[in-house]
Image (cartoon, rainbow, N blue to C red; front, top):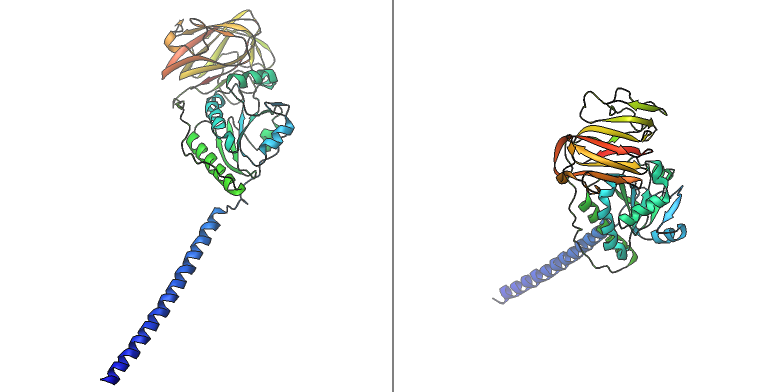
Length: 368
């Protein structure tokens, strides 16, 4: 019996030692596995930026508004920057401004900066006084640089209005968006880049995942495209319905059309043809068009009184745009964008604009 007990004790000791060794080994493996996982997680937070472009220099700037060259350089340093390429007579650009100004208000204290790059489409948009009026009108407090010769536009290799580039605090372009929309996606990336900045610079930042809530303009799927009155701008576009056509640099007497086609415009009276516009030479003139949209805007320059008719009747109040001054009239005094028609639903109408004001210039119609 004693030998059996002794053998059992020896076996028990061996088993206990074996279990201890196994437990220690497993514990060590767990520790190694946990360490590996931590290292892997850390490595994922280090972003490889070799595939991202560095923001180009702001070049060829004619004017600095709400800032100076030296101040802007210091403002950009270590900031998450939204570069907004826009122009103030572009309705698509204007529709994005409420979101941009709201982001500026919300995130400016967290290391976020907006830089408006004003790249003009028309000559009058190169006037700093016109741009100042626009930034006051839209409540823009952030820096705006006037890229009158489109050199910064070219440096970004851009081709569109509007376009937004988001750069992280190290100056890498991490996101860009063409046109309207994408507001929630853009704001989430702003938040992400601000978190990256805070982590990199060792800054504690209160997290707020809420998003700016603004009703987004809903476009009509089938609508009249933008109509250009300048012969150069209208190249390869069959938009002028008059038989007289474009005659570059000439004063043309446009006659009353026999019929009006959809998506075309018809000037009536004496109009001079420019590259980017038409100018009324006679004291009075008119413009007719058949359009489909719920919103109509016009880009104009020089003083004039416009009287609007819809389907041969004075413009009804339910269709009146926000810039209609009284009844069916629109007074044009500043060079820029004016809203003529604003309705809840899209529909087709024949519109006539009777113009009083020699020297009145019209550049485009835009639709929504």
